[in-house]
Image (spheres, helix red, strand yellow):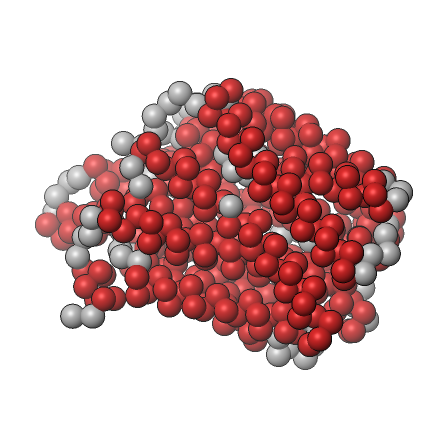
Length: 419
């Protein structure tokens, strides 16, 4: 029996395979981030080559994020039916293959359609990966494991920035999409080496035997209507609002920062590379600080501090007149706005009771994704009328929302929520 078949049918020891699983999920998240950043990097180049308006260019990101929202709503039930490993491999393979096809697109219309379907694949990777890691790691290691997964995001951004610096001057923007297609090797890794979740296999076996276990009882309770009943309603609405603010602000700024630095601040590819690399390094360092704040001071404190700091620093970033001040403000902004992403998944999950945690987190995050799909388009429209500096600065309102909704959420740092 080959490795794939054996691991698909037999419940393995999580302690033996947890690092293999973690490596696969981190690598998948690296290419998830790389795909999004590649799109941001090519937007100013596509605008120049195809003569697109900022509004039409923004629709490329909007299509991707709308597809990601569809994926976030859809992949979870599929994973519950067919298993974690196959679905995460399918997600990664989907956006990797379509990244290659994006490099072959001849028109804006083709690229918009392809970006939507790439987004569908991207939308499930984070959700399914988080489930895999949670189900393989014991409670005392889960927070560090999910933080390690989150570190894949700035690594993916850094790879995209480096690829843009090396590849684009030689081969053009299409080659960046071809580079992103290398994620297919991560999908193959997941199929061959990552075993199926023992928790999922046990739940399926219990279902066949007609055994009423904890997981099946939870699954029955966890339909989406339950999160809007009783005390769950307030938690759900706050979590949705928080996710909307986090995701709208992230994609509203992140999509347009490369274009802003090149078009309104006159940076070339080399200068852009160093500026964006600095932001990602600052963001990686901030994970350590914000993780400490979340564990020692409180989840709410990390969101409040990050939201307020992001509100101030993004405005300074847009107003900075010289390259030196732009770099300094950019480093501060990168440190502030990436830091609270580390504790965010745990913060959201801990708000919900066990019976509705899965559906609550999925609905909150997917709704944030859906709302964020409009932000690149709206920023593009505002940028065309008032300039990108003003349009990106508007996102300060949503960063402030992170602080406000973070303050309104309950503190859960001392609560054990996973049983």
